[in-house]
Image 1 (spheres, helix red, strand yellow):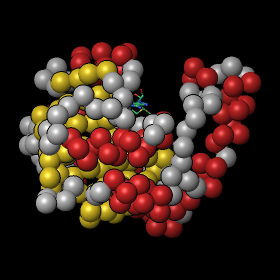
Image 2 (spheres, rainbow, N blue to C red):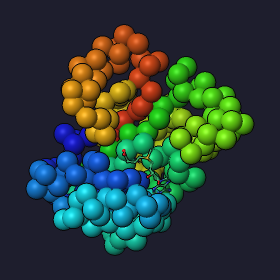
Image 3 (tube, rainbow, N blue to C red):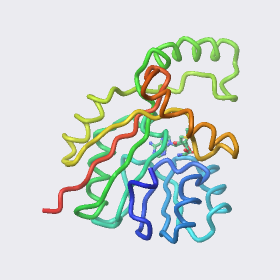
Image 4 (cartoon, rainbow, N blue to C red):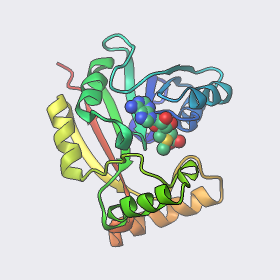
Amino acid sequence: MLSNIPKKGKVLDIGCGTGLLLTRYARTGGQAVGIDVSSGMISKACEKVPEGHFLVGTGESLPFGDNSFDAVTSVLTFSYVNNPGKMLSEVIRVVKPGGRVVICTLSRTIFTSGLPAVYQLGELMRIRKIGVGNFNERYYTAEEMISLFRDAGFSDISTRKCSFAHVGMIDPLFTLARRIEPFVEERLPYLAYNICTSGRRPSH
Ligand SMILES: C[S@@+](CC[C@H](N)C(=O)[O-])C[C@H]1O[C@@H](n2cnc3c(N)ncnc32)[C@H](O)[C@@H]1O
């Protein structure tokens, strides 16, 4: 995701959580801005990235002016957004003309199709607190993501599968996951459970 966005620009991360992506972005000299519906996540992000600017809010109604950012990112949050079209129309409004948007989310695969059943079980066993419960997650195909991006007005749209390597992992796990990923994505695509979609706001 980071290789898709300008290094020293101003970036908004939607559903920033504890600021994992923005920590790395700020290290490259970029200006980090994060928004998340959870105030707990936002206080952790403020501690982690003191030079960043964080606020509580939803991706479907962004409290920023038009053309405010060089790029917008979102990691593993789109699945929980109730109105994805509304979020993308907000994103295209706040990103500058020519600016890039990269969204990584859960994709619909054989692997994720089994998750709702696991989550139902989690609800019954009351283990929602450890992340096994019904969170109304949605899973998107590449075609659905492309169509949502196109309807919002983005151009240069592309998608790629991605799997294990998450910035939250510590090394050597992260390095190992990065090595395994290309093999999984090519040979075992149903295990690559995330999809990364990028697009550009047209310049004119
Ligand atoms: C799985 S976590 C991912 C956090 C972070 N992006 C990361 O990769 O570590 C999903 C995050 O999305 C946030 N979230 C869920 N719905 C949201 C919405 N509509 N707008 C903004 N944030 C949202 C949650 O509070 C949570 O922090």
